[in-house]
Image (cartoon, rainbow, N blue to C red; front, side, top):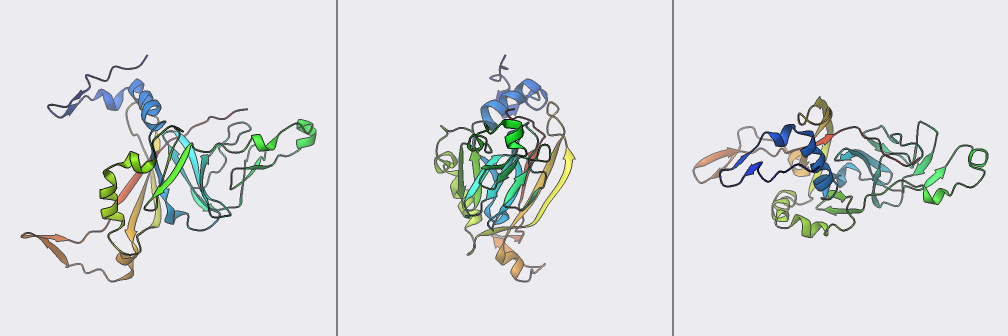
Length: 251
């Protein structure tokens, strides 16, 4: 039974109920109605610049593998082997032409195609149709200003329409210097509990900066003035992605 959330938000007084952060039922509704339908940020293109590069992340509680395949095309799949639902890739990032499940050795190309099944003739009598058992792709995948987004909803509006006026703020940040933005320094991970109702998860924080910010000296005492208030230059941004374990796959 769906939780009644109409009384949990007091728009007039700007208040929200603590139940939003602690009740499991509300959390499950968020997974179903928000994370399963909305466009979600996966990574920045500079994190997978070369053919074969991959990056592991999550969409809600579902583990996802973002890949630039051998031909250079961006792809995203559930990071789950189609055989018994085992986690396929356990590395955070890297470069690979194929991914092999550690459970029974099923092997997939970085295009998602199933290309290797041990003892396929003996165990399946040649009846297994490998073309039907590739990795499960996300419903839609798009990139904006190098930011890679995906959704599980095939009927979701295009990314540009979904972002709407938020693109103005993205443009102001990601287009403010020639050459764009590049993610450097990798991720910092640590255990945390996102809400009282959700399982323990791992939080990843990634720094995003511009080439210009790291290619020239940084003057500690430099400041830029808006009106009469001096504001020190601080070009650091942090983006956090909550992650959690998940197991879901056909037999």
